[in-house]
Length: 398
Image (cartoon, rainbow, N blue to C red; front, side):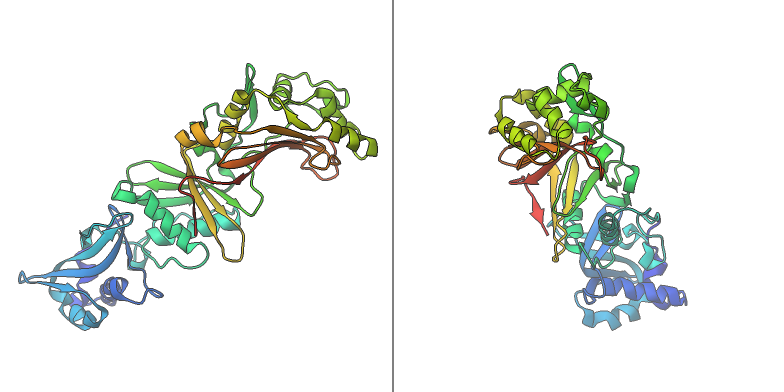
């Protein structure tokens, strides 16, 4: 993708209507109504918010433009322009700087290609709309519509200090890889083994920076949130549960990690719908003694790290929660278990075809559940770690 040339800011000098248009657009983007024009420009060093223009003419004289009322003077003298500098600051920085017009990206507004112009594949509405908002912002267009405030704030965070200018954003849709339940020795985990490696696996949108790095965004929508939902058939089949024979290594490791009794576990499904079973479920439920170190290590891989959580609450205000899953926080805070581990056979009221394991810390409350997600079936199909955020570092809602 190229940058602006002198012809784009010299008005009638070339005799081209297109370059008269780009000359006026350059000025309007700085001083025009914010409802019609974005004051942001895509540049080599990142998104730049302009508040003024400095023009240098062929005779060596310089003039600084500060308001929309000077547009006539600007366009009249444009054919005599040698170079133009935008005056303003980069996203995430407070210092005033200047950017020469030849360092401004020739985006679609100026007749070029949009940043990240590859057509998106279908995905969730939220992922698609949020990706579009991000692309609008990095193209220097007016960020409008759903989630525009959240998208603008996030770009400021990702380009904070001007260290990692953004050049593209891509929606990955269903391309993110599976994260299966695995076990190594006595330690269950969600693959890959290191939680730091999960960002690139669970990402829904990738932000590409000009230094060759990526920022991974995990998108979630609505009030129900879960970190994982791997299938459970590799841990125990329907027949295993019917036979009270949880003998696969993965199944044994899961039950032990959660403090579950094999017979009580199997009876939840084998006797589902029977009143007597509900009473037994409630009797067996309660606080259980578990190896918290093993459970915490599992939670680390279920949560993952090295990505931004982008959670649209799905309310009428189109609010979005955003926070970074920092590896250090996942290690030392978010995965810790600070209270009891409580098991609910048959769910909270004892009558369901599920087992819930509840635990929490100061930052998240968790509900690890083993249940059927398939309609009309009784035996478990998935393992899910549902969660609610309580107090997450630097969490912002916009």
